[in-house]
Structure formats: structure tokens, C-alpha cells
Length: 218
Image (cartoon, rainbow, N blue to C red; front, side, top):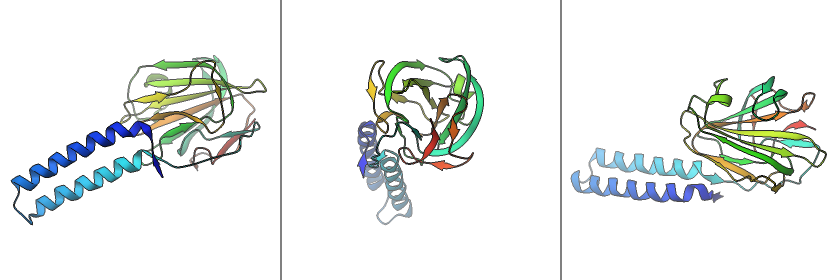
């Protein structure tokens, strides 16, 4: 399993920090000290978690214009009709996926098509499952128009822990279903806004995986 490029710098920095902490502990604490071994154990556990968080499993799929795949790993926490005020400004069907720190955090394109708009808004850092987080938290929205003219909005939302959203999409870019849309660091949420009447394929509270789980059909 590969490590995501967004994690290279963080992994290197934490390696140096933890190495220094253990060198200091080795000098300051007596040999065979319980506290010394605890520092080493906690350091290894933290480093393994960081490696685990930035994992990038290989997930290939055959693009299908009739299917909408999950753009993120996590739990489906919202399936409802709502007013999308940023781009569509009308009623849409919203599906929201909450990503815990233990989920894979690479976000993928749920459909193939052309990127029409990309929006970024600084904001708050409320817990990602809060209903208002979609409008008030730091977020980035990507509007994709499929080959048949259907427009879908994917919104990356920062959470209480996540402090950086990375979005690779650019206006006018041609994207492929399953390709990498971006990355959110340390817990967050992804919303998908679909046309009313879209056939939903997942129930509420379902665990889904990017590029594996079909969440709707066009």
C-alpha cells in the first residue's frame, strides 16, 4: 500500500520530532526505566497512526456514466432534499459522508465529466456532522458536468480536527470517475448534491468506500 504525497512532509517532520523526544528520553531517563519504554511505545504508536492515516490503497474502477460512486470513505450521515445556495440555488438531493480520522482521506471524482466551477471558502471548524458545517465550515466545492449534461456538486468540508483541505480540480479540466479530486487532513466530511429524482443506492448510516461503493444512479 502506498503513502499519499500529502503526507510526505508531515511524516518526515513527525519522524524527526519523535526521534528527538526518544533521544532526550534515552539521555534523561535511566536504562530499563518503565517511563522510557512508555515514551518509545507511544512514539511508535503515533507514527504508525500517521502512516496509516496517509495510506493510499489502489482502487481502480471502470468508469460507468450511469453510476455515481462514493467520493470518500466513511459513513453516510445525511440523505435529504435541501436547498443548495452556492451554485445551483435550488432544491437538490444531498448525500453526506463523514470521514473519521481512521478512514482513508483521499477524495475521488464520483463521475466523469468537465469541471465547471471550483469554489473555496474559509470558515469555522465545527464538528463535521453538524448540519450547518456544510455552509459555515472551511470548504471547497467542485461542480462537475457529465457527458449527458447532468451537473453534480462535490463539497469537501473541514471538521473540528481537519485544518487543511486540498483540492486538485481546476475549471475546465476533464476528469475521470475514480480519479483523485483532493485530500482532507484529519477528520472531515464530503457532501454530494444531485438532481432531484436521482435513484439513491445507499441507506443512511451505511459505511461506504471511495471508488468501490455506488451511492446513486443517474
